[in-house]
Length: 340
Length: 266
Ligand code: SF4
Ligand code: SF4
Ligand code: SF4
Ligand code: SF4
Image (cartoon, rainbow over all chains, first blue to last red; front, side):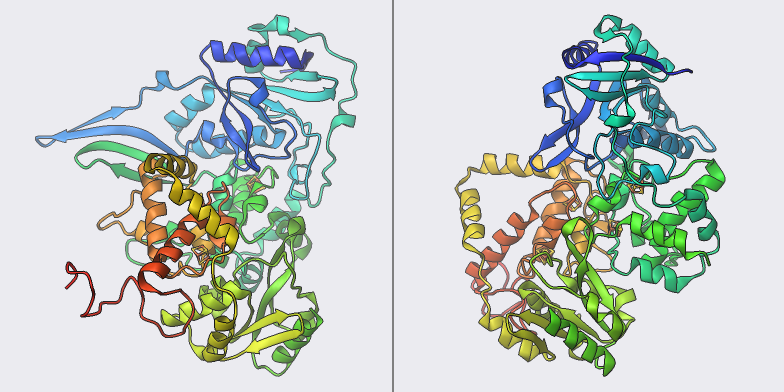
């Protein structure tokens, strides 16, 4: 679909958010709390943060919550009754104010959840989610969207992309059928396209490496134990990077409630030692260096090879959230330059 | 700083240690851990107020242990952590020495008793600000306090960054990972989060050396230090014991004494 250009004023944007709320939609947007900005449910534009670079967590929980019931079960008299989730009651959701990299990340999640068998719950949530992104006017040292095929004003992935043009005016790029539906439901709030220089409003994060160069080097790097130990020496093996990442999709299955209860899907991370521990006691990835290698391999080698999409959008959250400053960008640059 | 680099060079050149674990400039104006294995690399070491991480956490990591004897650049809490780990039989005296940068050069402490003497002379009390924050909490009603922690824990992702950053969370199988039986619910829902955080705090009571790394590690900013400091001060007032003061110690919460004043335990 060709992108349609319109404009919207800040006051109209406020009305748009109110309209979504009136329609019963759940609106998730970046909101400042203390010294952190994170996605939260909002009901008005005044609650939304615009001047941050990135939120701590990604918007992935809109389609992949950190804990969610897959189904419930009841067993009695040797019979087990399984009850699927009612998908119709899942909330219509607008994720507002996510960044272009975050919007692009949904393609990676879709590639994972619907790879061989479609994931009903994920698909239902995704179908009910509309992405209204805001282009980046600032980037920081951790951002690297431009090295992984994205950009601070990239439209791909968003249903609508807004760019702040100053003086309370936004360029609105309507980029999908969902975006058009949203526009049609509130057409009078949008103005005509503006003759504006979008580029001049955007941050300019430098392209640091070429993703295909990283993939090519990684292909020959698996067995280089010393390289991975050196790279990962200060990593302490937590789940922070995976949990804040918009594309990380590892999960764990837990049953709660005994004979009658529910089955839950919970976030998990390949960075944990327990993640690959077999019942036999054998662990194919007993060392953190092997788990760090897995993290990079999965995102930059296995996913492009098998699913045709990179597992990283360069949002930089893993670097900002890492307790020991692992800084993935530095490591990727080192890999691109390693050329074995 | 030059004295530190000089010392690191000497220790590596004379093969007194195989690695110096110190700090180097990192991203965002902060410092990060650096593992110096060649004398030539010692020039990258720095030490200033941005150097906060308790590097003792690395003494428990297999890939680091394998490197050989380590010299650890130590802050006051790091020294206490070393002693606490020693008291818990986790460190051999011969496996490390501590480097303490100071105004006039760098101290090299190569025995536990040298570390004990140094720690005994430093201020190990909670700061005035820390104490007054605890007092504010003590003054809160039960409901108010419960509400505060419920809100804080509701944000916990169960990413275990607090545990991974903590040098005293060294168990290879944490209680939260025991599932026969399952002690703590794995999901990051309200109950799972409450039990997880209370369990971790209790397992560190009398052991935590108040380095602050768990709070700094938490991506969502839960003030875990409040729990640790409260438990530190309770253990001090109830058992007259402070963690990390000696390389051999009876543990306040896991030592049985026949003359225990409590009836229920005898
Ligand atoms: S790996 Fe890091 S930079 Fe890449 S998408 Fe995930 S959090 Fe963002
Ligand atoms: S890279 Fe950082 S956030 Fe990720 S597992 Fe290692 S220490 Fe944790
Ligand atoms: S519990 Fe927190 S403050 Fe205490 S030793 Fe561990 S990381 Fe440091
Ligand atoms: S670091 Fe914070 S979010 Fe992660 S498990 Fe600990 S308390 Fe929870």
